View (tube, rainbow, N blue to C red):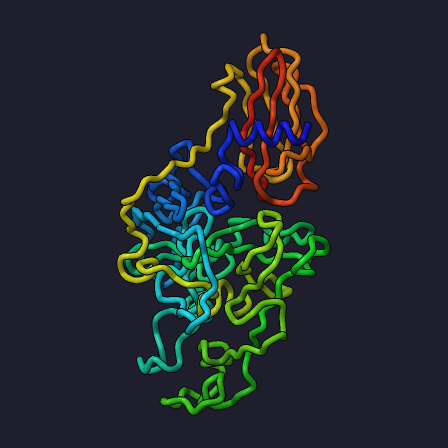
Length: 410
């Protein structure tokens, strides 16, 4: 049965790898209802298009969760960025000189909000040597979701987007919460302790640490700084500048890019992946998101002033997040979706009887028991034990079969 259902999924939902749809296509939080958020701006991702080599993400950089309404001394306000990001679907490691993560967006969170690195664009006396840490300097002006708007109105997160996923849930592998501009996935804080085998979980630990210095005369690599920075004191404590951190290979779980090669629920054969790093108090740990440099080759145009405004000039398919229930003439409602722990299935048409529902993973394997779906009586599925990710609810009965994508977030 598993094999036949897997074939059915391939036919009904081109959301599996064999149908050209991989996690970089179906991991986005797509706004299918026209919902708006801050200042009436459309939230999350408005459209996902893909070709063999690229995925295009249309978004406004406005999340569905509540932001603001103010950001301390920051006078800027979020605005619709009308982004179209072009991200490669075939990322490759960079075997040459690593590309520095730039100012501005360095990746895209799964809800279409921009990801920034740790630098706030300012440096000591504008010398460009001792660069200010945005988390320390701008952090007091972050909202409760740890975000704020840039001068151009681009709402963004420099660190753990804690309103996007449950960063306290250490019982399951964190979901994909975005993609870096080199095409590699970004996961939340928790991954498998053994990078080659699913099993025990742990919070991914950064391999960076604060330097043991009292004067700022040398750089993290030991070389003499071209500019002497301010002495370490209460006003400019260790961590105030990015150069106050040093990488120690093997100290943590992650490399100098803040990632590793590992297996994940979405990539059971393994992938390079970045991870969010936090400490035991759930505070951000440097470098917070991706490291100072990317692991992969960054395609031309993915960063820089025009990035985020790609023109689609190749044949693409629009990824459609819809139910097949309507096509099968089934009046079945499922909510909420995305779902945290409990999925409710409601058969609205009293004439539809003898329906049964089962939730499957992307391999076509059942992950819940089959439940009867009586008309006009909501049926609940307990999903609390499932890992965050993509699943499919299959409804059968009276000679019909239909499938709906379900996103489990936790």
